[in-house]
Structures are given as C-alpha cells and as structure tokens.
Image (cartoon, rainbow, N blue to C red; front, side, top):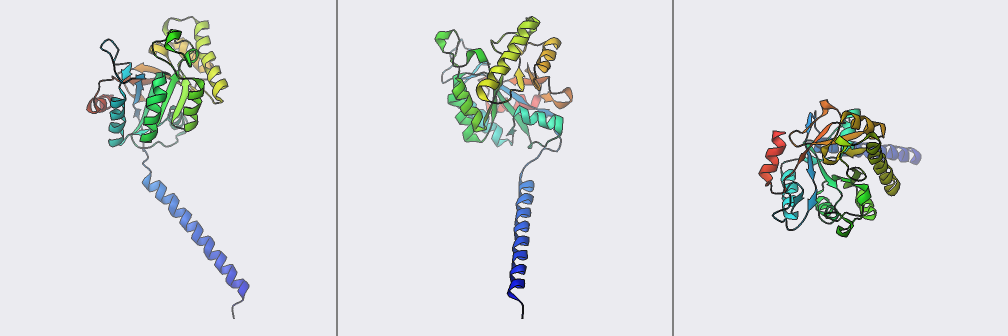
Amino acid sequence: MIKAGKIKKEQKKMAKNIFFAAALMVVITYIITTPVASAVEKIPILLYHNIKEVIQADEDLLLNITPRNFSLHLETLKKNGYNTISFNEYYEYIEKSKPLPSKPIIISFDDGYISNYFYAYPMLKRSGMKATIFVVTSRMGAKVNDGVVYEHFSWKEAIEMQDSGIIDIESHSDTHRDMSNSSISDMQFEMRRSKYLIEKNMDKECNIFAFPYGGNTLEAHNLGKNAGYKVLCLLGDAKASNYKNGIVTLQRITISGDWTGAQLLKAIGEN
C-alpha cells in the first residue's frame, strides 16, 4: 500500500508544477500580446498648449485647440496604433535599452493651463493614454486677474494628476523667460528654481526641461545638464526626435488646433 505521507508529497509536487506552468503561460501570453518596438529611430513628440470650447478669430491656433478636436486627435492616434509613452520611458530606452511599445509617441503640453486639468487629463484617462505637462512654476494657480492670459492649475491639481500615473509634471522654467537671450545667472535661476519647486511641492524628481519659446543656446544646454536635468526639449516643428541626436536635443511638433485627424497623421508621417 502507498503511504498517506507519500501521496500528500506527490500531490504537493503536482500542485507546484501546475502553479509554475500556469505562471509561465501568463508570462508567455503577456510577451506575445504586448506590442514591442524592435528598433525605434524616431519618436514624434506632439506639443499642445491650451484647450478651450470656443476659439476666437484673434486667438492663435498653435496655442489653442477645442476639446472636440483634441478628442479627435486622441482617437486618431489610437486607431492608428500609436502608444503614448513618457519622456522618462524614452530616456530609459536610449540610456538603458529598455523596450518601448510599438509606434511610440509622446504627448506634451506647455505652460500648465487649467484647461489641461479640466479637459486633457480626463480625456487622456478615458483613452488610456498619458502625457507630460511642462509647468511655469511662478504661475501655478494663477488667475487671469494675476496678469496671465489663461488660468493655470494649482499645485494641488498638479499632484492629483501626477499621482494618477497619466500625467507627468515637469519644468518649463520659473517665469517663462526666453533662454536664447538671457544671462547665465538668469538661466540658472529659471532652471534651478523651477526644478526645486516641483520637487519640493510634489515630492518627485524633476528631470525634464522644456525651453520656453524653444529658445536655447549651447550654454543653456550645459546649464540645464549641470542643474540636473536628464532631458531637454526644443520646439523644432519640422522634425521628430531621432535617438541618434541624443536626449538633450528633443524636437517637438507644435500641433495646430484646426488640424483634422488626417492632417495630424500627415504631420507625424512627414517628421
């Protein structure tokens, strides 16, 4: 007769084998079903600013887009197989060869307008997409009466978005000064103070800097790196970012608020 202890031992061994087999199947299924880019040379980085229901005739379409059209852009990207990533994920890909999803793309917003919180944030959440918002730290929570054209979201709202994992808050300087014609001390102040305020108020690392107006110089780049930024963003408007050019010269494509989905895809394709 087979002893009861031996039967129990065999049963435990069988259960253990079944568990490992099931775990292996989960891993294999994940690998098979998760789209991964084999080699990514260029990544389009889209740049938006403000979202508003009605855009007046005298308002710049490079700075404004309606919620309806922004939603159309997100739907277009999703239908055409684009997968949003963060700047930090792009950095990890370039510096550490960490894999990216197929057809990666980065969505970014400059300035930190309240419309990003009320419109972009929930729309991205519903779409299962992510974005980076570059904030001007001296304008956090600023109202129109404070001298800004459009209201800005607060630190509290910034923290909520950051904690969601959908939005990453990074630096667009402290006062939105053009770095292409600023003194060394002014550039250092803009970069270091904004980084300090973001890290202090949000309890997170601030590693990405977007130059206001796209203005930059070699000196500004060096100051940015010395301030502790890992990634520096330009404007470009005519090129997608090529990893061969490094992580401190990222080009972004400014999106026009009147672009259709087809026009958006054409701009991405041409870059």
